[in-house]
Amino acid sequence: MNPNRTSLKPVDVILKRVSASDSSTINEITKFATSNKYPSPFQSGAMFNVFEKTKGCKPIAIVAKNTDNKLLGSIVATTFMDAGIIIGKLVSHVTCRGGPLLSSDDENNFTARLLLKKLLEITKDESLYTRIYPFFDLPQQYSLLKNIGFKHEDWLNYLLDLTLDEEKIWDKVSKHRRKGIRKAEKLGLEMVDVSTNSNLQTTYDLLQESHKSAKIPLQDKSLFDTIYHYLVRHNFAKMVLAYRGEKPIASRVVLTFSGIIYDWYAGSASVEEGSNANEYLVWKIIQWGIQSGHTLFDFGGAGTPDEEYGPREFKRRFGGKMVNYGRYTIVHKPKILKLVENLYNVRRMV
Image (cartoon, rainbow, N blue to C red; front, side, top):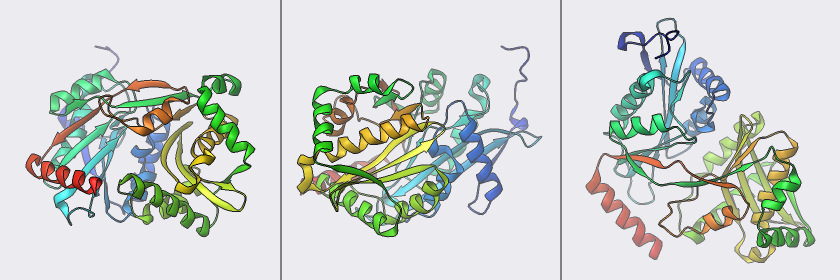
């Protein structure tokens, strides 16, 4: 134990659930997340505001402070209501990406434990399950999650170091992927930032087309409206389109936070599959990230290793480092979850 560190007692920590009207604390959470050693855009007050304005979503934010009102830790999660299957709370689930965040190493996981238990108090009666996606390799936090009752599953991701020279990064890209990017450039594809409401609608239309083809639900357009009008304009996100001549053929949405680019949503026109627009956009964003001083490109997840997952191969070929930080889940209503999973699988087969 560090003799210079004062151990916290339960009475020293005050937990508070943050309301949407508490702009001061929401801004404080954003600053806390931005300056944290282990930053995550999904743990920011900015993202809380985005999901607060998104149909079918309900964000949860909890802060832990000491008696001097110093922020010791925070956690932000979102309740997603999949109304496409059954209406209401029956199918809602809670996801927390990259949290909780702490002001120090949190000796004995004290603050982290309080935040997680408070989150579960809120979510256990309102959702099918609560799931945590770690963004960093933090064994101490993994042990805590298991101790509280979360079940571990392998969950892969790819991370690309943007501090290297562009030429070295290009050399890491597979020959097949480089060939596709060169083909797209020869076809005259151009990356354009989304800067109008018309561009925004086009972006969503392309996302819808891809998600419909893959039989994967897409979030309501209100999410992308808020990303554009709030996150993009505050440099927390970037939305782009790939044009072939006058025709938009692919779109991509990434988050930009504390020097890290998080790949989030992608869509393309099925009739333009041969144009290699998706890999072209990823490479152009990587180039932009290098030039703008970003340090890491996070591909946003690559599925479980024991399941076939097409996007994993797409991401692997950009030469990033594969990591397995896992995901952690507590199921609150196992029987209903099994029913919903069966319904979802039937829908995907139709």
